[in-house]
Structure formats: C-alpha cells, structure tokens
Image (cartoon, rainbow over all chains, first blue to last red; front, side, top):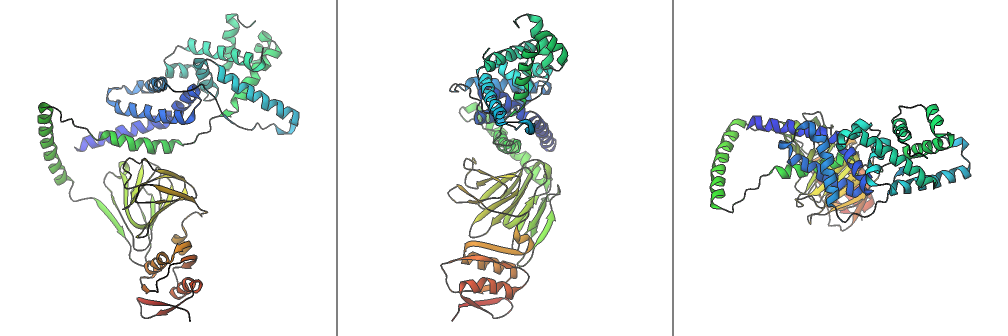
Length: 171
Length: 316
C-alpha cells in the first residue's frame, strides 16, 4: 500500500514537470495548425490526459515527441475544423519617435498582409516556421519534437520564408 | 530567382542566425534581403493571447486525472465477477490492514470561538486566517500531495505554490494552485472572493465540475444549491477587511449583519423582524460603537441587558 502511494506521488510530480515544460508548446503547436485558441487549449488537455492514461507504456524519453504525435492525431480527428484564421496579439514596436502617421499606417497594413500570408501557408511549413520564429526553438529541437530530420525542418523554413515574401509583397 | 538550392540553404542558415547580414546582402541583394528581414521582424511582434493560464489548465487536468484513477470493474461475465469478488476480498483485507496501520488518524483541526481570530500555517507554510466561530481540518500526513482543507465558517487563505489545493465546505469546492482567497461559509450562503491569482469554484452538488467558474483577482462568487455559480466583480484590497477587524456590508440582509456581530462579540441579539438590507460597516474592537453603527442607520436603539444579551428596538 504505502510504497504504491509514494510511487504514485512521484509519478504525478514527474508528469507535472512535463506538463509545466510542454503545456504552452503543445497548445501553440495546435494553434499554429488550427488558428483556434479554444480548440487548441481543449485538445492540449486531451493530449495530456491521454499521456497520463498511457504513462505505464511510455518511455519517459519519448514522452515529448509522443505528446506532439497525440496532439497531431487529435487535431486530425477534429473533422469539423474550419480554415485557419490567425489572430495574433500584436506587441507595439518601441521605435516610436520616428513614426509618422503615414509610417504607422503602412506598418499596420503590412502586419495584416503578413498575417494573411501566414494564414495561406501550407500547414506543415507554417507550424515549423512559427515554432522557430515565435517560440525560438532551434531546428534540432523542432526536428526532435516532430520526429523529422533537421534537413526537413530547414526545407520547411526556407519554403515558408520565400512563400511569405511572395504573398506579403505580392511578388 | 531564389530557386537555386544553395540560396535556399542560405536562407535556412540565416534564419538560424548562422549567416551574417553582409553575406546575405551579397547573395540576395539589399532589396530582397530587407524584405526577408522585415517579415522576420514583424513576425517577432506576434504573440498568442492566451485565455487560460497553464495553472488553470493544470487545475482542470488534474481533476480529470484523479477521475481516471478510479478503476471501473466490469461485471458482465461470471468469470469477471469471480475475479471481481476475489479482488474485492483482497482489497477489503488490505483496507483493514491499512486502517490499522494508519491509525491514529493524522487529522489536524483548528477551531475558533466567538470573538476569536486565529492565524496559522499549513504544513507547506501556506497561511490561513480563521474568522470567529469557524473551523478548519486537514490531513497533515502526505500533505504535499493531498492539499485538501475542510472549512466551516470563514477563512482567508494565502496558498503556497505546489500541487492542487482544495477547500471544501458544505456547499462548495474551491480549487487553486497558489493564490490568495477568502471563503465565507455560513448558514446564509457560501461566498468566495479571490484576492490574488486565480481560483476555480464549483458547487458541491456539481460532481463533474461542469458548472465551475474561474475567479481572478477582484471577483466574488456565490454558489447555489442548484449547482450553478454566480460571479460578481468587487473592488478589494490585499486582504479581506475582516482580517483587519472591519466588517462592511453592501445591501446585506439585516439578519446576516446581526449574525456577524454575534459571532464577533460572542453575544446574542434579539431584534424586531426586519425585511430590509443594511449598507455600512462595524469594527470588532468596541461593542457599543459597533451596535451604534449597525443600529443608527436602521432606526433602531440598543440596550445591553447583560454580558451576553442585547436587545434592539425601534427608535421612538
């Protein structure tokens, strides 16, 4: 009885650590896919719950990439998801003194065009690009999490960037 | 023009910060490079506006995790029934041993009488201020993994970060990770106010926590017997006023105000039936002054019969 209760306690602690480390990452990953924050939060809950249920069959080293796999599967099962419409929160840029109203307007326009361009990227490229740009993950880290080669990550990155330039500058 | 593989590789390397600006300008020309640069700079200003924090998500998740822990035994076939029965017997025997082993119980109780307040610390140094005529009990054994407090009365909690922390009253379950909040559980109602961080409130009758509500700083909730939770926003200070000896009311039914005076001074008050509400405040350090503050606006006079009995009458 007693040792059992103890191992359960540390098991939960380990799980909590994993949760603290990857909760945002998984939610953002789902957000990059779906553009729907509420859906992303709900699916992240499901993903962690599945991991918890299956904890006895999972090698702790594999838990991270397994989480991404579960999240991806849950997303694919969510058949009724609509087309992505991203709404990021925008942080004000701090170079205020040189901003004329004209400049500000152009900036706003460009932001909108870029957001639409991100919208229109192929999902795989978008996810990798945003994982790198917003979460500052290295190619190696992204490759580990998504079970890809570093080469594949590089390819998605430059494809995304070239595509974004075309779309947002209408080249 | 940027279709040549080497350029694409260059882009990928540059995105990882492995190539200098000068090299990029050399390969792509200033205009194209500036386009890329602007895309990256603008992307960097985008962030995700989260609606629920990680702490909230954990509160939700851990509740569901503990539900998963309850084994479901199927009784469909004779075979499984036999297994179930033998398992049940084994479990019962283990339980008996467990009960014997774990005795005496590790339940800790703190209790206050009328006119008393008590500040104490839980095993993880979370602090509790207990108002008059209130009691708190908890299991100090294995506290870190089982932070559950039973409350009757009123208390203010400042919870240290850690595993889920729950307060249970006869009507309500409040769940948090680390925060400061007040729980009021008296005959009249249950009222929870969040002073810092976030708490989740659900009615005791709402077993799946379907109707639970999240409170953030400055929000107050009342649970009802139907299982719903009603939230209002109030302006609040760092700690509840009662912890500093001030009791204020906003359109509170008069009998609730009288009940609080009774608890704070350990007296019984007889008063004419009044179907009105009281707005105002009293202090816990001077009975006469408190009676004046409560009676005056209501058009009442008070008479102190003896140490424990006070009679209120309508002013002539």
